[in-house]
Image 1 (cartoon, one colour):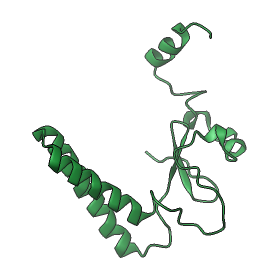
Image 2 (cartoon, rainbow, N blue to C red; image 1 turned 180 degrees about the vertical axis):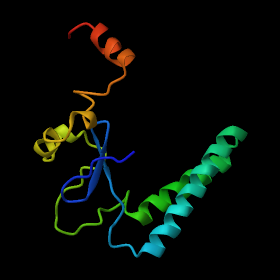
Image 3 (cartoon, rainbow, N blue to C red; image 1 turned 45 degrees about the vertical axis):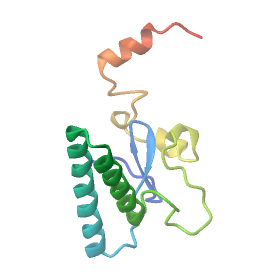
Length: 128
């Protein structure tokens, strides 16, 4: 699935939330190496959970964190123009809200592809 990317290329949007993109200045070979390390670490997390191994889980999660920081997806922002980092913010609470409103409804969960059961769950809640 292709997720919408903000016009400045800093974030992609999943279910209305901004997620920081990888640093585009990374050389392709370094990026490939880091993505492979990230996937290896994620597999290790899955295995540690299956094995109920707390020490292995801590180590694997640390490896995931290290790979994501090296990719620029976590840690200090990879841009240097002083703009704030909106990683993990809801897009409608950021300066990207106007851009988001122009995206196809299929990308915006508040207007489109919410599963029917989820819509019913939200509709059943009393107003507060």
